[in-house]
Image (cartoon, rainbow, N blue to C red; front, side, top):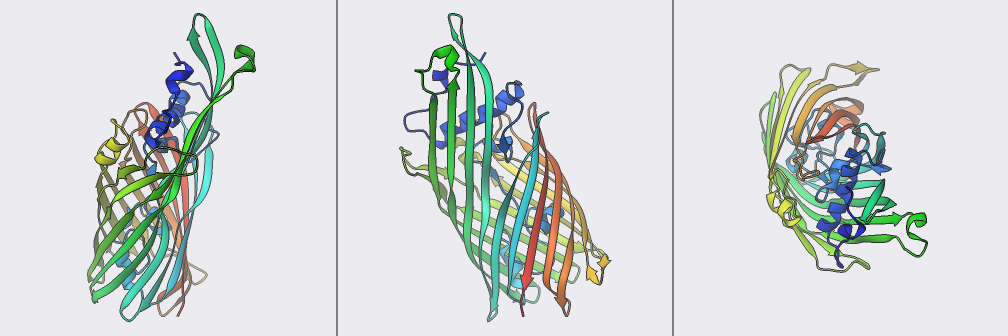
Length: 406
């Protein structure tokens, strides 16, 4: 039975954790068949905690199922700063991502975002970089029609509206250097930015309660603050093998009340993320890659009162890349991969996971002396998320352009 209105009331000074409970109720309502589908959503599985990590932001990593470390070539990466140490030309990189999700038997919903943009500039043996990348994302809005039993035979029609708009990113400045012909190292210093906005509204049917009863509404807006450091090393012992290792350390993510939102700053301890990856060229045309990451989100889940979170989050992926494709004298690499991993926060009290079959292609638009001057990668993922009885399927396409200048 649906609970009365007062049982949903947030405290006078709502916190992100308290309002997250209201947002997750949307998923419960959908499972109960009380609403056909979310009006708009990135993913209802992002409703827990402060969202889901955005993951690797570039198309090549996505199409190979990777976690963002240890691929061949020189490139700018927010999660693998050492990869920039192999660059010989300055360049700019940018990604666009489009996704479509279907929760249960509902209708598909989708959105488009731009997960990262960055520039890299080699100068006197070092490669300096500047970029902005997504870190955590939570965007959903849903409407639920329900009957509320107030007792004594009073049943009232109501409409609940849940909304969360949360996008936390990081502005990064970094440096990488090729220490020896076979070893590169790099580091990025990040500054968290973005906001977390959550709202809940309940409107009772005037024909049941009269026009004098106003709808109930609560919500809040918080600004994200904090710092992070990402480091990595890239070792290439020969022309056919590259190995990488890296880590991201973060201080507390502080959520500072903004505008009319009252209450104290909420501090969420973010975990140390460890990454390993490698790329092996079996032939001049065929390469294999594998990568894994580990992070302990227990403290973050505890700060947000998430008792069902898995704690340690493992993510891994494997992929194959074929570089023998030629279209109109341009190289067109093809890729196929698979990835799997846990989500850091629970959904309806159950630990959640995500997996996807990945693939895609690249195209070398221009190059000189074997060095790409302009290239694009398109990564496509078909996957699913699950937690207990809840399941969601998705399509995601990530397009990344990289342009270099002599």
